[in-house]
Image (tube, rainbow, N blue to C red; front, side):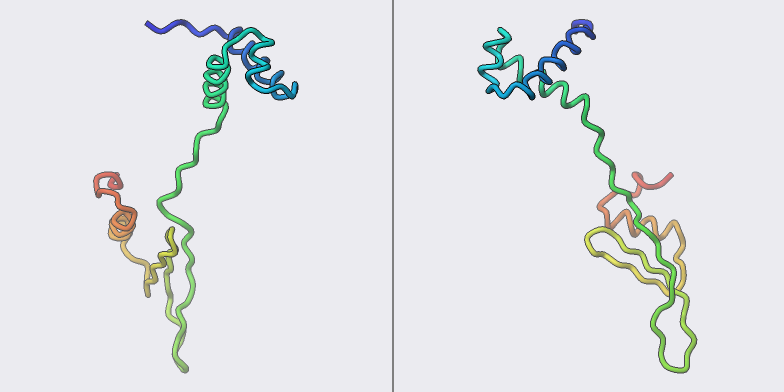
Length: 120
């Protein structure tokens, strides 16, 4: 059974780590002065750093969609176009907007995802 969390213990360690960051002593010298083990110092430093670090953002499956015109030959009007720019310099161009379901399968395949992971 896990021990219950003690908020005062966490607060004490946060204050201790803050004192160390301003004292100029090595970790070993600081721990000797505080009468704590260096192993405890490092364990609490890791534990508190993990709690305070923000979660890593998940990269989006899709990136911005740019609607524009494809280059056209002299005398012709510009054709409507869709261009998708994906990660790793992958660019998809379409003369007209593709079906969303088909496009989702293409992007999932390019991203290496199974169809079940992207189907709602």
